[in-house]
Length: 111
Image (cartoon, rainbow, N blue to C red; front, top):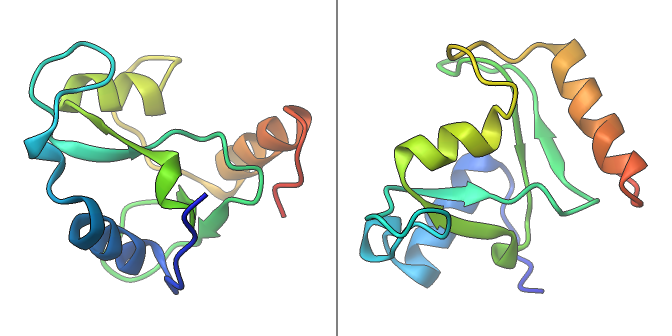
């Protein structure tokens, strides 16, 4: 576990890039093609939720633990974040609450 002192989603991604480099320097863990993004693996039961803020589309769930991020290509990142498929959608308080409930049900406290 490699915890950071990130205050928000953007800080965490900046720290991630500084500590591990660009995701593009790695292969996608799912398909082996060139990665493009650092992707939160959604296994941290103490994940943070970033509520709607200026300049963002929807809600974001993120972790302070750098070990919870893996390199993924765009396609695999989308599939990982949206297992139900479909078009990109905006996260709502309800969908975020459902994600947090799934984390809690998986055996941890998502608060």
